[in-house]
View 1 (tube, rainbow, N blue to C red):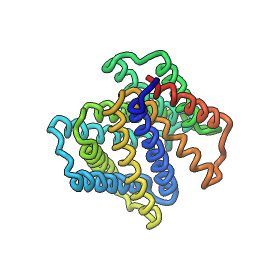
View 2: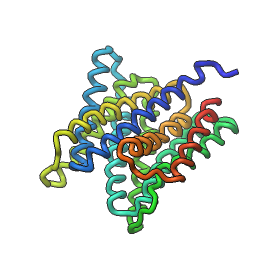
View 3: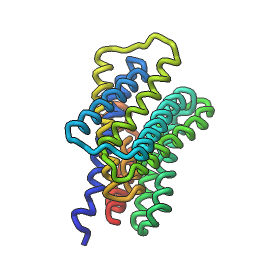
Length: 282
């Protein structure tokens, strides 16, 4: 019979799913009326501020230089991946680029985790496969058409996301608060550089700025919870479970914006739900 402690990393991962999914919904909604990169910059700024403040308030031990560097690299890769992902969505075929980036970003660190920590059992592996299928179906927009040029950028974005997971894993057992803060600082620097390099007047509404700040706090909280899931469990399980966050974004868009909810997205969510207990019971 599984012990309660066995479900602790799963709990961290599922709460991270809610935080990341809600953050994407708020950030995406804010970006409809304002510059997406400026909103993202504000989100990273608030996320960094929240994590750094919590780390100082809780007297969290400052990480070693090596852990600090790994967290900064993770944030830089994640921030770059996000920028490339936005570019891929705007220039390519959304119905292909979104799921490619999502699945690739989850698959690479999952395989890395299997090699680093040993193969899990048959049941968890089955759960990984089901979760991957669910991620693809949930992330895939329906009826979108466009040029295929965005596929290459989507692959690069997926590599950036995968790099974030692997590098943040390399921080080891150092303070999750400081690791989250350092990763957000690096992401903030990357996105700020992109905003300044474009040399255009930013379009930003007050309401969008507020939503961006809230989204950033939720996003950094999700990162914190992912780190704790990784520290208390396996990297592959943490990556696969937290990668289900688009399901929350889709559901929120359906409930609050009455966006079209396709049959395939429903199948994807059900598949993902079926995968959760399989992954947890390892």
